[in-house]
Image (cartoon, rainbow, N blue to C red):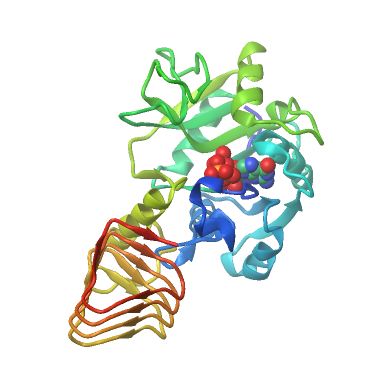
Length: 329
Ligand code: GTP
């Protein structure tokens, strides 16, 4: 193994439209939506930094202009951040090939790639170590789910080598799925065509397998969530607030809630269960808010009960209303 087979560089795929998360993604790209008080991308940057990553390229397209004003050159996170903007979305594979050009990878060097919409507590340093130890070209972080139909199903052999990559199928043959964090060798990245629309899941992984590039799975059963839908996004925020140790980027939590400066909460209101109350929200007397995201400038009237709901910015929940499990956009 050569010395420069290091993995101190990463690409974050943050350019998708996030249509399944509409209407939340009408005004913000999915990776910039706040989970437990911080954008999803910030949770990932902090995780990457902790695992020794020092250089990140954000692969942007949809609403590309909102990332740089927030993350800047990365100095506040102790790393370097650059931006690869796709005028036309290149797909997940095309985005990797495009962003990799900014990282000037040397032969034998590896790069970590994150899907911009997953949060996990998996051990990234371990994944990197395994990648080096097996001399793999690709190491896929895998997790197990009960129903694999909505994901890329990835069966392994006894040595942990990937046998197939089967993107979203009706009858998955395994419940180990692609959990959206990969390590690629520079050799594997150079197989992705440049300036073309390419899907890493549908085009690149099957091609690399066909060419017999060594691809391994890194299985880890730690906390993992894919924030594809409003319900899973709400769950992610609730989970991180209830378990702040899941991400070092989570804002400070008090009494199982995260309350931003500038929220006005009546002293008789009952807030908890992993709720997030954003700046400018007003919660009336005797109201109960559990496991919910109450966004900026929302008003919740006196005596109302809001459980497991997302309430979009500026909405009003009238007094004495009961709502459970709703996404109000
Ligand atoms: P849906 O439209 O709801 O499927 O969401 P999405 O657009 O985010 O697509 P998907 O969940 O398949 O994307 C996985 C990750 O790749 C997300 O973090 C996206 O932001 C990112 N992504 C998807 N397509 C592109 C692309 O064309 N360019 C870049 N840079 N990133 C992409």
